Amino acid sequence: MEILLLTESDIEAILQIDEVMNAVETAFKEKALGYVQMPPKVYIIYEKYNGDLRAMPSYLERLGISAVKVVNVHPDNPKKFDLPTVMAVIVLIDPKSGVPLAIMGGRWITAMRTGAAGGIAAKYLARKDSKVVGLVGAGVQAKTQLMALLSLYGSLEEVRVWSRSKSRIESYISEMRPICEGKTTLVPVKNVKDAVDNADIVVTTTPSRKPLVFDEWISEGTHITCIGADAPGKEELDPKILLRAKIYVDDWEQGLHSGEVNVPFSKGIITKEKICGELGDVIAGLKPGRTSSEEITIFTSTGLAIQDAVTADIVYRKALSKNLGQRIKMF
Image (cartoon, rainbow, N blue to C red):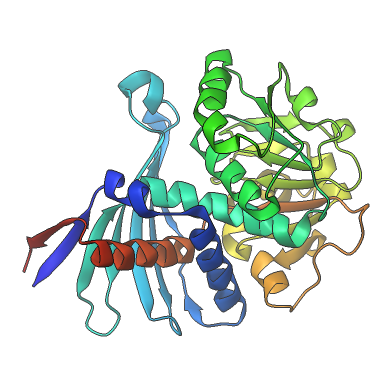
């Protein structure tokens, strides 16, 4: 029996944001309708090294897709080791036999499926006439989040980019300019307030453990996608914003444990009743999303194993059709 081995370069060559968005939207809906097995992700914390390791299994029953991802998050990697902050490996499994179909790099899949989730959240929660985006953070996630928003809206009036590092902003704009040409204007800003003030959509993608975005900067009608807070203790928003907003999580248990709401929830600042539901509930028509142009909406993303599984399935099928990858005999 041979297993297909796919590298990150194989995956980047074939994966498109629009197809990932379609697959992830379906996965959220399947979860809401009860056709998914997905235990909460398991964490190992490397406190000494400012990092963690997560294991993420899942099975989408009606789609016949199953996978396990092992992923790390080490924010110091780029400076200390010249390595990415996030690295991952995904094993795609045949549910009928338990046979591993493929082993593939999971870094770009993680980036793309998370970006796709942000785009889907904007589809259901942001105003349809949104034109101005504020990006808080200028790493890989800022790239795929913007790719998804451009796929959704076609064009945007302005995208403001903030990072603690001026060189990171410059690098981001240089990398994204070809993707954004004719679709939007990229504007570097010096502080977070300038990025988010009067923005229609705000996307936070930093590993911060204290608020960066404050209540007085957020206007009525804003949608906020929170990506950076994906582990206990992380938070990017002033809790006062949460008290004004309609909040949606990707998963109840993961969201309360490690999403943007985890710190204010643990302190009793917000209660479970303040959270409107899961994004999948809105997609499936089980709960309402945005109901007026004045509402502030928040999507707090922790990242779901089902997102990885459906994206890995796309990669596997496309790789087979294009004869990509290397086959290895393991058993």
